[in-house]
Length: 401
Length: 176
Image 1: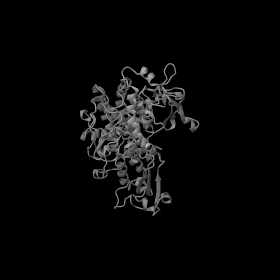
Image 2: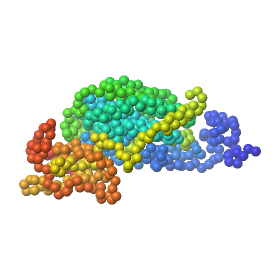
Image 3: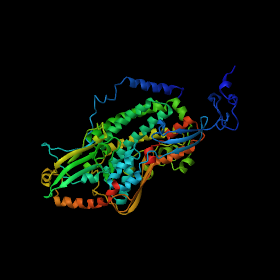
Image 4: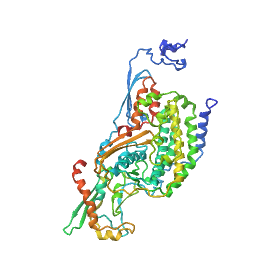
C-alpha cells in the first residue's frame, strides 16, 4: 500500500506534471508552482528584523502559499540614523566619520565618495601618492567586504565552515587597515585633500605577507564553497535577474555585471588612480545567484592584482594637499561616484559657502539591489528567498543611512 | 567537475588540512594582541616626565569634536590666566575618530591604547581627565614647541581661534 495519500493531497501523487506549469520533478513531492492544490490559507511571515540571514535589521513581509512566495515587501528604516541630515551639521573634515557608518563594511569607499565630491567643489589637486594610497586602501577594503559577503552567503545557503575561513582572511586585512588608519572599521582616513596619514613600514610588511598567502586562500574558498556540488545545485538558476530588470531598477556593481552589463565606475568614470591600474572587470550574463557569486569571487582576484600594482609602484610625494584647517568650499554643487563593493556609491554635495554642507545626498547602491530582489521574490520558494537576499549583498547601514 | 561529489570531497580535504595546523586565534583575557602604533582608543592626556600636562584650555578639541562630548570648564583669573576646573570627556559617546587630537595645537592629548572600556555603572563613563588644574601657560608652550613646527605667538593663536568661535556661537542650541 502506498501510504502517501495519508499525508499528501492525492493530486500531488501524479508523476506527470500539469501542462500549464513548467516541469516539476516528481521527486520534489510538493505542489507545482502556482497550483494551490489544498486551497489553504495564505500565510504572512515576518522575515526579520532579527532574522540572522537578513544581514542586519531588514524586515521582509512574505506572503506564502505553502512554501511559495506570493508577495514580498521589505520594510526598512530600523537602522536609520539620519546621516544625510547630520552631515549638514558637521564640518567637511568630520563628515567622513558619518560616512564610515553608512556602509560599515566598506568605510573607505564611503569616505572616498564624500572626499571626491568636496574636492570637486573646491577644485583641490590631490597629490599622486594620496591617490595611490586611496586606491590601495579601497581595494584592501573591497576584498574585506567581499569576504564578509562570501562568508554570510555561505551561511545563507547552509554552509558554516567557510565563514570562518573568510573571517581568517578578513582578520589579516583589518590588521593592515588598523595599522594604517588606526581603526578596524570606522577608519576616518580619507579626507578632502588626500589621506590623513602615510602608509607605515609595518603595514607594508603585513601587505606583503597577505599577498603571499591570499592566492592560495582564494583557491581554497573557490574549492570549499564554489566547487561544492550541493552549493552549486542550491544557487544555479535561482533568483535570475535579467538585464532589463537590472537596468530598470538601477542595479550597479557586481549585481549588474552578473546580469550582463559591464558597467564599472572605476573603468567608465575613473577616479583616484584607477586610470593607471591594469585590471579586468569580471562579467557574467546568467544573472542568477551563481553568476553573482562568480563575479564577486573574480573581483576579489582583480582587487588583489590592483593591490600588488599599488604596493610595487607607490609614487613618492605628499599624502595630503595643502588645504586650510577649516574647509569652506565656494557656493556650488558636485556629484561624485565610486565603485563600492556593492555598486555605484554616489554623493551629491551642495555647498552654500559655509564650513558645513548645505545638503548631502548619499546614493546607496544596496537600496536598489534590495528593490530588485524584492521584485523577483514572488514565485520563488521561501528557502530561496534567503539565498536571493544574500546574493545581492545588502548592507542595511547603507540602505537606512 | 567530472563526477558528482568530487567538489564535496575536495572541500573536506581542505577542512582536514586545516585541522592539522595550529590555532590562529589567541585566548584573549590571558593573551593580548599588540595594538599598532596608530590604534585609536580612549583619549588621554599627554604627561611630560615631571607629570605636568600641556593643555592650555584653548578649546580647539571641544570645537573639533563631532559628537560634542568634550567639555572643558575654564575659569579665567583677573590676570587672564586660565584654570581648568574640569576636563570632561564622555567615553561612552566617543567614537574615537581622532579629530580632537588632530585639532590640538600643543599635542596635549593623544588617542590611548586602552581598549577595555567597559564600566559597571554608566556614570563611570563620564570621566574628568583633568580637575582643578591651572592651564599650561603660553610661555611653557613656546619652550615645548618642537623645532619643526612654526612658532606662533599668543596673539596669532587668538586671531586664529577668534573666527571659529564666532562661527560656532549661533550653532550651540542645535547641538543640545
